[in-house]
Image (cartoon, rainbow over all chains, first blue to last red):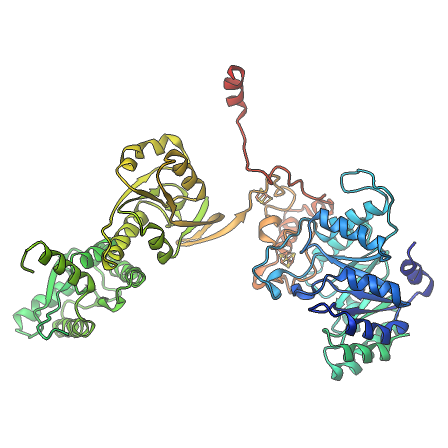
Amino acid sequence: MTSFAQAIKDKGFVVTAELDPPRGVDLGPLMALAGRIGAKVDALVVSDNQGANLRQAPWWAAHRLAETIPAEVILTLTCRDRNRLSLGGDILAAAASGVDNLLLVSGDFVSLGDHPQAKPVYDLDSVQALMLANGLAQGHDLNGQELAGAPELCLGAVLAPEARPLAPQLVKLRKKRAAGAGFFITRPLSGPDALKTFLQEAGELGAPIIAGVQAKNPEGVAAAAEMAKAIRAGGLAQGLHLSASGDPETLASLVEACGR
Amino acid sequence: MDARYEPKILALICTYCTYTAADMAGSLRLQYPPNVRVVKLLCTGKVDVLHLLAAFKAGADAVMVSGCEIGDCHFLEGNLRAKERVAHAKELIAEIGLEPERLEMFHIGASDAPQWAKAVEMMTRRAKELGPSPLRKLEAAALAAEGVAA
Amino acid sequence: MIVAERKPFAEIAQAVAGYRRVLVVGCGTCVAVCLAGGEKEAGILAAQLDLAGQLAGRQQRFATACVERQCDREFLSELDAAAREHDALLSLACGAGVQFLAERHPTLPVLAGLNTTFIGVNQDVGRWDERCRACTDCLLSLTGGVCPVTMCPKGMVNGPCGGAVEGRCETDPERDCAWTVIHARLSDSDRLANLEVLVPPRDHSRANLPGRQAHAAYLRRYSSHD
Ligand code: SF4
Ligand code: SF4
């Protein structure tokens, strides 16, 4: 079991925060922000070409964070930008570099980002990416061929509690569970009620839910913190995932307000 | 522009409405420019995009298609089809670099002789403003080169 | 059917600019139905090119021909004599037809007048919608007759992504999320259990290479003589 999986199990409630790698080579600001918030969260989630916009590949930041920050690191990998060879290779490299927690997502479509002309990959969907990673953790690739040494991995997936109709989402959710998702991070929520409604409709998931709480700007921090409190007090989730649309100061104050 | 330039305009008009109007314009001795050459069709629904392109190829400075008023087509929707084809042909001639204004669709009822006279006047004025079709000039130059009087 | 659209006129005009005698070759099957490359469209394009050539002061002649299908040798052979009378062939077939024509006339420039866009259906007069990506492993029996490979921009085969908003696709609020439609269709036809099937990663090995197939009867008749 990776230490993040252990943390979810032991603590019962975890806090994660989302960091976007830079649109250039300087990792300094990201490391500085991580230094400020690292002790107040259980894990830092490094995004992958967030919103289909070009950024530094997340494995480098993830590796540097794992080396220097006490918090756990979760590496996001999209199916949008990688085929199965590349996904598998990146997962093995990440594990080798000390990053063993993964958030495997389909990824926002290319038309939403800054390179709408790009050819999207989607060789695998997020369920199949989980199957791939789960297989690697068991020592074999998608074709059942053995690896020289299996990584220990903790696998996460995304959950969209507010998507409607919900029924198709629940199908996907069950498959993600079956394919090896050990935790779910939700998309940013509109409020605690949205999560409550979802839980009533979805029933028992069999895996911890980390509720997405987003502040878009410094003014939004208070409301987001309020929502986080309500989610925690209501026992609606097993954790919080804090994000701030890429604004470091907003994220720092949000973590200040909701972190450990 | 050459002051002696007199545009050549082809009019493709239907027998039931516009032609009747044109005929009546004659009986009423209405005055309108003599630049227009009329081709009478059973219905403007007969007009094909290829005919319109062929007219410009043959040296027309402008082409007008005129059918019945909307809703009055003797064949119900021939004039609507003509309208679509004229719109399409305008795009096609624009693509090759010819002014789309050289081509126009009209709807003139059988009793509307003054309307016909006005349409011809309008098209003649427009053709004069646009100047000779570059295709016609080329045609003339080719004929001159062959020693034939234009 | 195969759906295609005419290339921008300027691009075609430029491609044929260097040739004196050009044969514009229509195709009477799919591209005729989608009003891009049939006999009619070949005639119109030839007339346009003719006028444009004249305007540009080029000495060019454009003739037209149309065959039933450019993707069949049987029909292409009808063009052999006419092709020899020309300096270039401008094909208004889909990409497959253009290539087959070019293969038959290796010494002649064969130019493409259309952009082949998709395999689709006729929604209405003058409107076509894509329906199939020829993925070589059809999932439609499982997915309620709605193709997740084509109708979902991400090609998700195990359920929707998280981006659907009120049943619309994250890429375009005007489009239904394919998975909303699949779910509704399977629900209406009492086949929701289909959705629980975990679809494994697709085998792309066949689609990765130029497709080739032979009918069993053909093999029975001919392979033994090889
Ligand atoms: S699954 Fe879709 S793309 Fe594949 S063959 Fe069937 S309809 Fe075509
Ligand atoms: S919203 Fe639906 S159709 Fe659009 S990409 Fe996601 S799953 Fe596919």
